[in-house]
Image 1 (cartoon, helix red, strand yellow):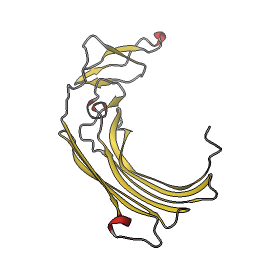
Image 2 (image 1 turned 120 degrees about the vertical axis):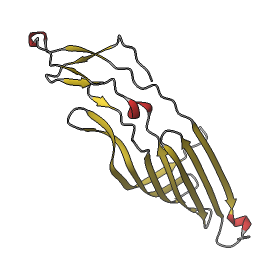
Image 3 (image 1 turned 90 degrees about the vertical axis):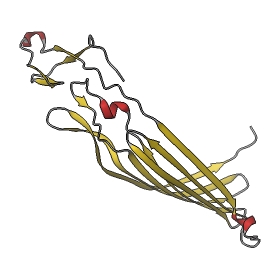
Length: 206
């Protein structure tokens, strides 16, 4: 991030504006459209150090448990990711997936995962904007997903599947007006849940 002192911003409001401790009065010449030019303050020079580690393991449970009857496929996938941001903290996020097929025609999947998004430099430190400001106290956004799927072969070339999903997010980063400007902040939670049906047909090699 950075800025230059000669850069200016255009403001069309009819109110006094405070920027970096300096108050700019309303522009008096309304017959020119009420437009005034303000110096755009340099944003904070910022950098961050990031460390990330990801591991994943796949396990063929059918082979490990020597299962023969009633199991065509049974597998488990386990993964995890660790992230550390020196400016907003660290986060550990697991992922799990189970696939079970009792026969060659039917299969089931269960998936679970967590993730997070660190605030951007603009969301943290933006200050050279008349209407929007950053917030250095922001927390990362976090999300949890769950998915359950059941599928089957209707014919050799036609498959059908039904999926239920649930996505939960918290600490979403949005703008909120504090009476003077829109400031980035963590606002509440959001949940999305539903179902999807898919019918897929393979018409040929071409």
